[in-house]
Length: 100
Image (cartoon, rainbow, N blue to C red; front, side):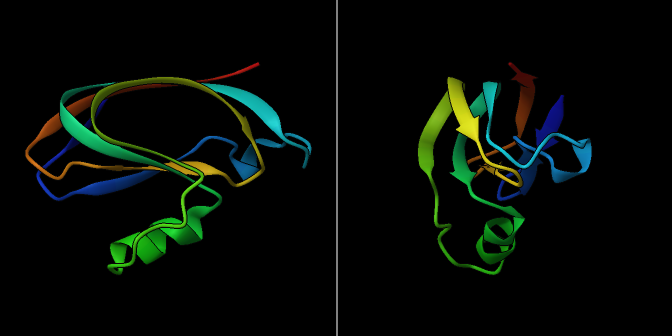
């Protein structure tokens, strides 16, 4: 469970390079639910999060803007992750990332 205040942003890995998986792509199932609308950006690496925080639009693989839920399966490369932004108000977010 994550809580993001208005304007806050977080990054979560879909394919964490520290988990010891092989360098190849893996299938991941992302399930997200939020108490308020959030923006979710699937990005190739954490550097895109750093760029986003610095004010640049992320170079995203997929975008889900103004959503309260996301249920998607991805083929994720090593280091790939998601940026979650709460643009309108405090959001309590449930997040599950399953590997298959």
